Length: 300
Image 1 (cartoon, helix red, strand yellow):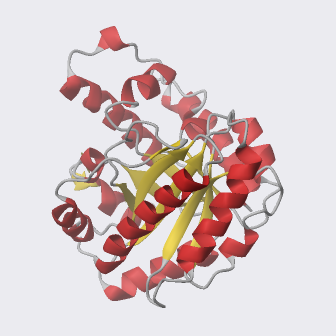
Image 2: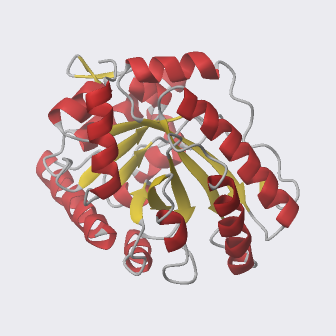
């Protein structure tokens, strides 16, 4: 299902103006055991990496095929690379998302974080990036997601994070995809407010260097001050600003997000809160529906 220009243009419009949120289904190797434990699957219930990934794929497939998981409330879904290459009922996951659910597929491309330096963690190198982006286009993926973490209000560190993010973002744009630039600020940072000022100003400076056709999205920690990132959302190169839940509970994250007029959700753990492998399909779909509804209402 290679991406065609008409579909891409339709997806840009939907992502820019649509009502709803982005589901983050992109837990990778390091975070998968934790996500499975939340889902009621203990580490002694699977043997080895392949079995672990089979369990998480089954969970993600169950979420994607749930009745409430459609474009009425879910605009997009961020996938782990193995999920992008996987299938649901014999069809590529990306095909099921877009053609059957109306949900725009994204791909997580970062390979984890470097050690902390200057109060931040930069992204590790991404080997095989050119081939991965070409494959993503071939699967009909719309955009990518790449995460760094800011722990302290350190101007040197934050400048390095944003420089790296935009350098990678330009490569993604050149491959015909839309990058979700994600410089997460740790919600427990004692200097979170000061870091937000530095981050906003640094992002704004880099946005002004983009060409007209280089469109990006931003995934940011919900700010202390309501509407703090509105000016970024209004920039002509920004398709959408989305929020990460950052460790907040679903209710906490939704309450904070509802006060941000120009941010929509891109939640992972909050989306799957309360779901369990042992649930009947009826109970699972009902619980997921409640979470989707909460996140949707907070996003609009």
